[in-house]
Length: 210
Image 1: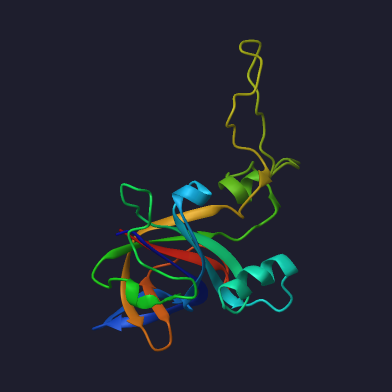
Image 2: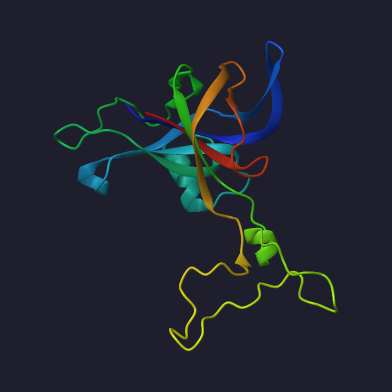
């Protein structure tokens, strides 16, 4: 069964495998508490709505009502986890509102995919955004970091779509696939994966396994 668990990125460190230093990322996966169970009949799709992240200090009345109905403390984020259904459109897993989904659902022997939102860097030029080499800084040239000519001549007399230019960089959803789970600490709700994952420290990430 596909598994999706939400957590927050703590940061990077290293662990030693013998004499080899392995770069790892630590993810804090606090229990994902089920707020609502969505079904095909009522909502058109089958999923679990879960509350994740740190506690929300001042939720709106509508959001606070959802958490109160499930007897769950308000959390900063609410996300949906798809679940498999049977022939009648009902979830195959028997989970009630208020159930806590912890790191024990992950299988350390399997690889995982981590989904996150990378850092937003605002408006960036072509040198920073696309690693352009720039022009020669000699003979009075004053456009070292400019893109240069972007158009064609008389035919076709237009700029082709997809031309690499300056623009907004970052703040996009990124998936890193096939990461090895180095360790799982069920007591402290920590998952350590090999390599880097997208997003800043404290950012929300999703760990997926098939």
